[in-house]
Image 1 (cartoon, rainbow, N blue to C red):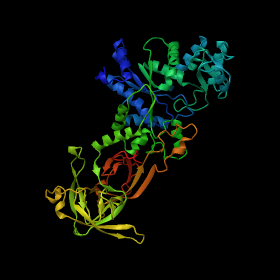
Image 2: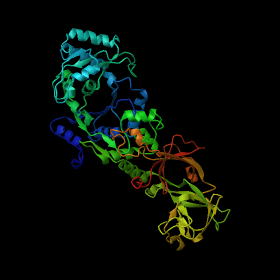
Image 3: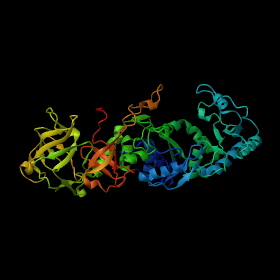
Image 4: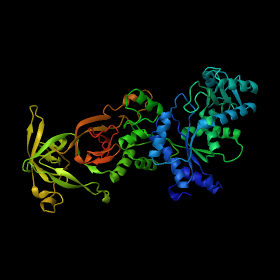
Amino acid sequence: MAEDKKSLNFIEQIIEEDLKNGLPKDKLRFRFPPEPNGYLHIGHAASICLNFGLGRTYQAPVNLRFDDTNPAKEEQEYVDAIKKDIAWLGFEWDKELYASDYFQQLYDWAVEMIKQGKAYVDEQPQEKINEQRGTPTQPGIESPYRNRPAEESLDLLERMNKGEFEEGAMVLRAKIDMASPNMHMRDPIMYRILHRAHHRTGDHWKVYPMYDWTHGQSDYLEQVSHSLCTLEFKSHRPLYEWFIEQVYSGGLKPKQREFARRNLSYTVMSKRKLLQLVEEGHVNGWDDPRMPTISGLRRRGYTPEAIINFSELSGISKRENVTDVALLEFAAREHLNKIAPRRMAVLNPVKLIIDNYPEDKVEYLKAENNPEDDSAGYRDLPFARELYIERDDFKESANRKFFRLTLGKEVRLKNAYIIKGESVIKDENGEIIEIHATYDPLSKSGSGTPESKRKVKGTLHWVTAEHSIPAEIRIYDRLFIDEAPDGHKDRNFLEFLNPNSLQIDRKARLEPNLQDVKPGERFQFTRLGYFVVDPDSKPEHLVFNRTVTLRDTWKKK
């Protein structure tokens, strides 16, 4: 049983109640059933963490079952990407299964339903079928084919599967109740014709089962105890249960229960809209770091722990809501702060020359790799007369609230010395190209001298001009400027794209300890944020992506 009953979500409460009422614990089995028609996104992570988390809590198996019933949209690329994402999150599935594993059994059951008078082939066009369904307050109209002899429907279904008819020419429908107040029970479609090659079964099938006919039967065949779906399937539950009753021959009857899908502010979660972003070139692929896909978040530098923690913080709800993306960014900062080594980088450099520092001297200073991790140790930082600092960290003259470098005032260079701004050199356009300063030789950090303990209000990061290395820095921001870009009925979500969601900086200089980094390594750049080495990075051309800033700066904007 779950260890802490005080913190049980409503799904866990349902499971606990079922166990209390006699369900054997060894009969618990869960599943994650994605359709391989796109990449998983942060919304899917809620279902992944829920199902696999329940598996861990109750030491129960979890199946990974691909809902591959629509060959028009599904590809092996998506299957491979989904498996990679789940494994990257740290979860293991018990069995890798496919709805297509059950195509023959589903077809055989459909044949039996026709023989029993519970299904029929309808030759009407889809538009006519839709018209006859009625409305939530008005009953539907029975199809003129509803009572056709079983032999006709059996013959037509066999010919449908031989490819004798065009797509859309006819469908197989369940015969339930056209007057049901639940629209899903009004003779739902079980099979449609698709002349498409399937990524696993090839050209063997010309008819493919619909989701509602496939899902519950797959759960039953796998003996899934709890089929957890998002809220839009709540109204499908009576049909889910009706279909299972038609094929039931003993064993466990799966229980479908629903939870709210996860919506995230400043993004879109529709696979169709995400695909549109990719196909129209608004982003650079499914793993673009601006995308809410798991592969995009991975490339941006998010950790599996951050995503799982975000899912726990967001919780499992019975009602639709929108989660602030700031919570996801908080989860990233919280974990990266613990694990990310600290390094220094200057993104918009201006040269700083310490006039009274010896010209030919280079000394190596000790710097902590991570103050949050006692085992992280120290690294050596070269320090010399000529440095780079951030251009924004200097003003010729400034008011009292400017705590960085200015003429006549002191600041500390991190891990190094206290310096004072003395003068500047400008180019013909009046832009500062050199800052000249002096330093206090007795103020070295950690030296223990009284001068080293002297307090100054500002501390700046820096790199040496001689030893620093160049890099490309990709500054990613939110993809949309509107909190709900697809929530405007009269406007296209693309109108809210953020024109500044990606800025590329090729002037950056990094401390030399970053020379041998590998793609996927994460760092905190002092005072700038958390960064990850991009897969595009090479030793001769380093590329870093900003994951998140050190603090939430969006609301200030």
